[in-house]
Length: 241
Image (cartoon, rainbow, N blue to C red):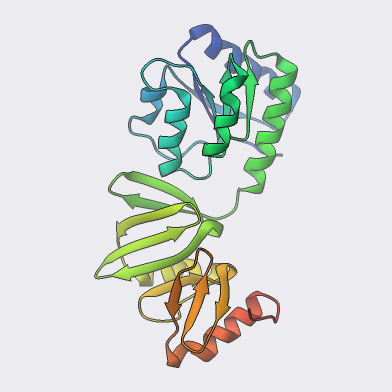
């Protein structure tokens, strides 16, 4: 089972923070082998300031002064597509907004232990399922964590790199060769000098281009076309789109 789970509790009310941390401690006692590394924050600005994508699960109060939980979650999602978000709210009217930031669920205050333990179990399952490969990208806005499976393609332009994902694009400095070394063993292929594509997100191939999820059409060089088609066929089990 999951161990060393990094949990953040963002709650402006001291009693609310203490209740969640007490529930986490009880869950540890009742589930040998599960441990939590817990950090608490007094408001949204507190967690956003210098945010690093190091948490597995964040419990976010929605109604907080200054920066509410929804806006906090939106800012976190810019830098971290992987962290599991669970909202804690005194009003269910805010729950539907959670879908905008891919929140897993919400808990209604005062949070009873049974409901908390059930949602925590779901959260841990998602952490385990998403515990695959990720990239840590150093951008102008900070360090962003992106799941490799979410990367559609990587583009190089004069020592500038654009990582195009299902959820947006990240700009940084670097070389395509460095990404190629890391990503080719994970199902990527370089069809020309400027692009590295995720074979799982190729939707079509013609004589000169490959089409990607999202509609981008990227050139396939004549010299690499045969190898590209072979790698694609191997990746998808013999069927080239």
